[in-house]
Structure formats: structure tokens, C-alpha cells
Length: 234
Image (cartoon, rainbow, N blue to C red):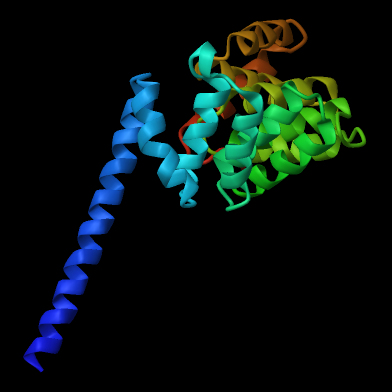
């Protein structure tokens, strides 16, 4: 009995040591990629990526897509992003959509991967889906659907581009009823988050508004920014 327990304990120790070593190799590779030490990054990450580690696969995709010029390889980037994306990695799904969108101009394939990333909560993908619907790229033009995705992307109080886009849609009555108060509110919030074009739009909208409307929009922007999530601000 003692021998059996000793064998089980030894096996557990071996497995645990392997997990720790695996994590250390992954972190070493990620740190090297961050430091632009691509030789080390590739040496550490490629074996893990070949074993199916989605994070390692995604980071390899970044290296081949955006790393040193002599390493850039669109085919390799797409290969690694796809492997991670097929495992459900939202970041890889977004990047794969971006590659098809901006490198191959294949809007239908881009929409496929953007949609998966957006459904997995990637707010950049949600915002770009809004753009694709607004402009009719890879899908039929649909302003209502565009607003839906902009609103989802603007819900976590992080992504100012989606807030800017909501302001634009309200100002022009696209997918929503035209409402200058909400156009000003979203533009003002986006400006506060650092979106420079939104600040210019907000100032333009003010020329079309009464002082009472401006005061209401400012009040609503302050109230919205005081909440944890922005999804119900309009």
C-alpha cells in the first residue's frame, strides 16, 4: 500500500513539475516577444504552439504579422491566428478578421471572424462589425444592426471609438431617431476618453442645439460616466 501511495505521489510531483515548466516556458516566450527579442520568443513559443497552446499561437501570429520586417509573413500569421481562433480565442478571431479585412480585402471572410470575436466579447470586433454594417462591407448595409454593435462595444466604458460612432449615428438619424442631445452626449463622453474627432463633432453639434439641450446633454454625459457600464445611457 505504501509503495502504491509513493508511486501516486511521485506521479503527481512529475505532472506538477511539468505544468510549472510549461508555464515558465510560455511566460519566457511572451516576455521575449514583448521585449522584441523575437529569436527567443520563437524558440520558446513555437513548440508550445505546435502542442496547441492558443496563447502561444496568437502571439506567434502577432510576431509574423507585426514583428520585425524580416520576420513578417502573412501566410504564417494567418496560419497561427487561425489555429488559435478555431479554439475560440477572441483576440485571434479579431486578428484573423483584421488580416482578411485589410490584407486580402476579403470582407466576407473578415465578417465571419469579426462576428465570432464580437460574440465572444471583443469590443474592437463589435465596433468594426458596426462599421461593416454601416458601410455595407461584406454584408448588406444595415444601420440598425450597426447601432446594435456600436452600443455593445460602448457598453464597457473603455472604447471611445464606439462612443464616437454612436454620436455620429444619432446626429445623422442613422439606425436611430435623430437626437442631437444623445449625439452630443456620446461625442462628449468619447472626447473625455481621448477621441479627438469626437470633440470636434461635439462642438459642431452645439451650433445646432439650444442652450437647454446642451445642458441636458452635458448632464446625461456626467451621469453616464458615473456608471459602471454605459449600455443604458441612451
